[in-house]
Amino acid sequence: MVPYHGRLALRIARLVIAVVSATAYVRTAGFGQNWVTALIAAYTIYSLGAVFAVRYESRLRSATAIVADATNFAIWTWQAPGDWQPALACSYLLGSTVLLHDLARAGITFVAALFIALILPPGRNGNLVWTVVASGGAAAAVGLYKRYLEERMSTTLRHNVMIRSQSQLAREAERQRIAADFHDGPLQSFISFQMRLEVIRKLLGRNVEDAAWELHQLQELCQTQVADLRSFVRSMRPADEGMGLAASLSRMAELFQRDTGIAVTFSGGDVHDPADTEVSLEVLQIVREALNNILKHAGASRVAVSVAREDQHLRITVEDNGEGFPFTGAFSLEELELLRLGPTSIKRRVKALEGDLALESGPGRGSKLAIRVPL
Image (cartoon, rainbow, N blue to C red; front, side):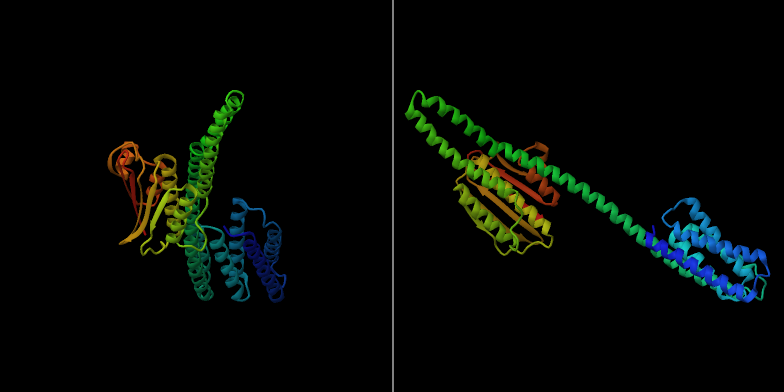
């Protein structure tokens, strides 16, 4: 679809051609043939009106424009005192048709223009036929390029729709993950906090020593709650700007150890950042979630995080000495999906990266999460 300013420029060009050609005809031939003069005047008035009606488009108006331009070309083909008027009329007819309409309609218009040129007397049609052929060739090239651009635009629009849809699904999944994490983490701590406050209120009237002990327990709960909230907020933050993947993971491990008191060792190896920034962000989110799961469920005292490059893959390992998952053995991503075991959000992110996942666990012996994603 030609934009408004493009359509306006085409209609102004039509008006200029009509006025110039009509002026040249009157100066050369005068007003001897009244019907020719009337047709030329009608086309000029139509061209002027079309300039002011450029905002109003319909199929009838489009068809009328093609018929009017073709009629104008026919008039100049038979009545023009020179060759330049038919050439201008032909160029505008084919050019505007191919810009404003599809190739099929432009092809029909070209055939009609060639027919008009061919039925001229033998001495007059030679140059005009070549003019029609040359204009038709140029119009065909423009039309093919226009179709190519339209196909690319259509493909781009479809991709944009798909990306928006995937983005919406990802946002919804992230909302659900945040809601679940908040429910399992900070919210549970607030509920426990409220329950302990009620217990202390009742004990204050009966046993001050027990109330003091409960208050001490409440202080410890507050410390745990602060750590949970810090981990929860940090899990929603993007990667640190200006830091590579290894540096961001090292920083994450350091902050996790400081906030939770769980000893964390990190091994970065010789890791170069993936070319796709989205891969780095997803890897960081996977490690965040793995650490948060260890904090909430594992009861671990030590965690080891490592990242290394293996051929064209990035290998990430998170291992802890906690209670492990409620199953024994090593399972792949496909097996975990079939058995409906393992961390759902991490599995989803690994699948989105087209990576592999192996989860090894033993109750009371900790767990090991190994992930490979293509670079």
